[in-house]
Length: 154
Length: 169
Image 1 (cartoon, rainbow over the protein chains, first blue to last red):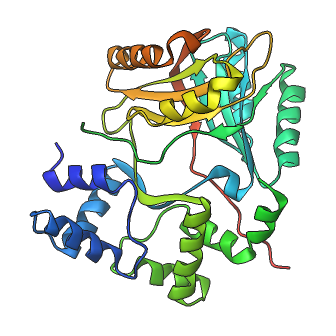
Image 2 (image 1 turned 30 degrees about the vertical axis):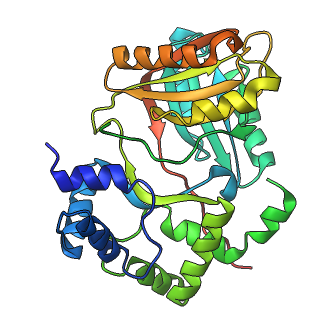
Image 3 (image 1 turned 90 degrees about the horizontal axis):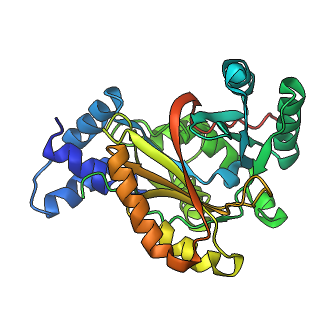
């Protein structure tokens, strides 16, 4: 069960944590202004608890992947009997930060992020060599998402 | 990214990314703690982060929810085939929907892959996701030449962004 304050923090602070020297104090002030009196320490404790329970992975900046290098989404149509073997090869690359099995003929989907585009392409090429399977490379061309955060209780 | 933008990302920005990508400390003055670690003034750190917010290198500063743990266990990668001359307008409409967490244009890979618009849809069940899909179908209307849903079967690897600290020159 989530408390009122937990829901409020989860819903309203997926973005907009203030860039000031005492941000949690500022959040306490903002929430108190809405008629729910809360202290800075309660904000810190509640965020720490959400993090310990794994309900949030962190509190901090979310970077645009392109800002820190080059990335792409790639997929492979893996024969069912080779899935574990191929997935292990793909996950073995430090440049692969997401790897999902999905219900489709293209059943292995992964994100490759590296410092440069050349390095990304090298990883894809090496995966093709190691697996003998072709990789479908689908780099992002345009980001349409408006960053409102994800509403959890609407 | 253009070369200019890359040039603008100096070593300090990279250090800031490395120092904050796993989160801010949950202490009274988190930016001061990070600044201390980087051996810079807190004001310089905040100034750089403000600039990175402005350029979009930092998308937002916030609590990053774990959808699975919060009960949003169903997610589908929906992929749509829409006309190239309409994609900008339709992509913006799709990206603004509350249940869409990512919405990207990607190249087609013909003949096997005719889809150019990707949207990640979230819900508490497959049924709920299916309802959302219908909303998108209605929104795209006649412009949708086909779509597929790719439900995740298992997460094989998921880690946050990892950037090594720049090596000293």
